[in-house]
Image (cartoon, rainbow, N blue to C red):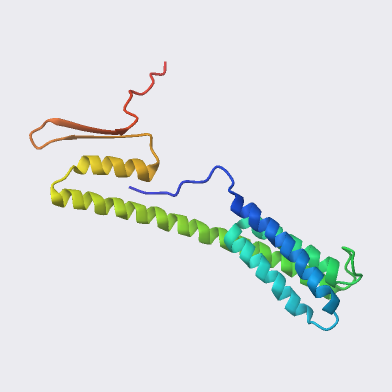
Length: 188
């Protein structure tokens, strides 16, 4: 039995929230640091932007991380590169910085996706192990192993119906149905 994590088919609000939060944070960093851009090291500002990108990507997901990376790069460009308050860059060093900021955000976003996928797979495996434990406990106690197995598989797989068919030691057919027990539709 393999247990694969169920893929989400709809978007949750967490990624959108982190994307919007990263956009707002990028603007705030630019606004707050702008008066001090002559005295504060721009490498320190880039680290602040990277923290926003890493947080958005790690928690909000890939799309939030990419939005954070692009908004951080645009805010950095607008507030901190010459000519100021434009999206034009007149220095190769600043072009490299903005490009690296976007590239780092994309790489972190991909890493966040891998981490979340690994966590989902680990949770699916833990669910399967918990089911095996419940089945083992039922067998040790002489309990309804087939029913425990069927109910656990239904939850684990998200199935509408689980049927277990087996022969008892006396040769009698034993059937346990869990879930939707109506007969399947006949398709002609």
